[in-house]
Image (cartoon, rainbow, N blue to C red; front, side, top):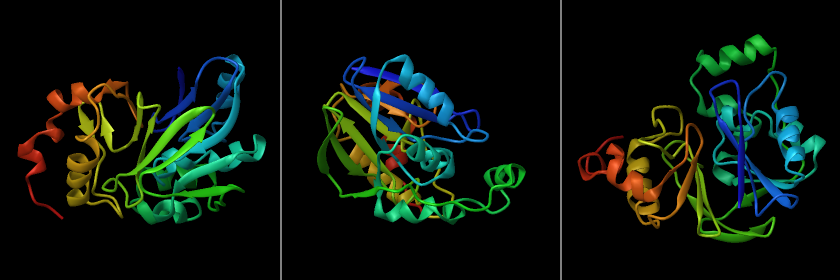
Length: 230
């Protein structure tokens, strides 16, 4: 399997580019924030591997994961897959962000105040299995970071974890639509039930595995998971 990434200059979000091998179809995950967008960097990387993008996967609606999806799909027509619960954030990104925060300051500096959806948006179902670019994917709803967060397994080998799970950490739950209780449920019922051998491709930072995180990640231990919160 070919796995590469473009790291967005703002918030260092991983935009993963995944294919079965060189010179095949590929999927693109979470095209993030650059000025004016991340499209040229993504297309350069795709061309380097002689790939054909066929779909964009969005793990959640935060702008550092969606900023470049509309210009990317305008230049390279393809479908965008995400949950219905976060879809509204494509046109109203501040619906899940702090007012006056860093993201809003960036938008003001860029002079960006309007967003529109990509032309083709496919709403995912929980535990939906589907094929893209010759790979078998499963979408698993994983609320907590946002209400509509979703993770994906690929060929039972890779896990696209978005901002649910990082190497040694998890995504924050204090922004609008986030929930500490939902995150704990997600970690218990949707992360810890996965195979140790899954390689984890997170929304930020380096790769890890479920097996490593099960042992080393403090947020996957019972003293955290058994807490109660809002």
